[in-house]
Amino acid sequence: MSKIHFLKGNWIVKKKIKEDLSIKGSCVIKTSSKCCYELKEKIKTKINNNFFTGYQIFNIFESKESIIFYLKNDKNRTKKIYNFEKKNSYQSLYYCKKDLYFAKLKIISNNFFTIYTKITGPRKNLNIFANYYRTI
Image (cartoon, rainbow, N blue to C red; front, side, top):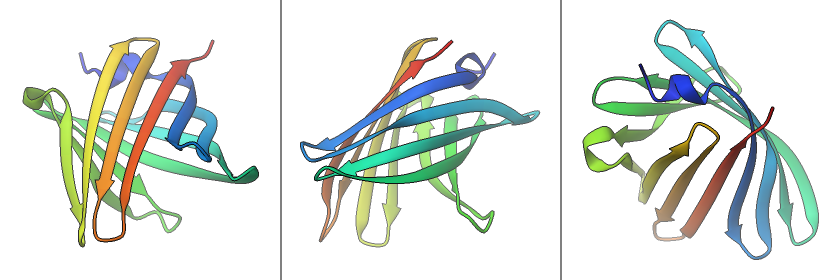
């Protein structure tokens, strides 16, 4: 049985980037086809006490070797952004132009998981700590 299968359902998401930049919202993970799942976040971003709303949609495929996340844009196109390799403790490396994205997926239980992302590049140096809590 796949790991993602156990994560289907409704979630609260809280992301911390730095003191004056945080993201909160809801998330749902559902089956979209026989071998594919969809993760959809509806989020509110707080930057210096100002709020912005948005969403992200990911298609998730799981194989014996990895869990792959594709970011879906508003034109229904997808871009591979995470390839969490099971043999490497669910770590992922992704290059986007001059930027390097290092990510780690940690499934703590059926009710809690995290995604840590470090982005480095000529103009970027970010750490994103994302916590997902199951809702009933």
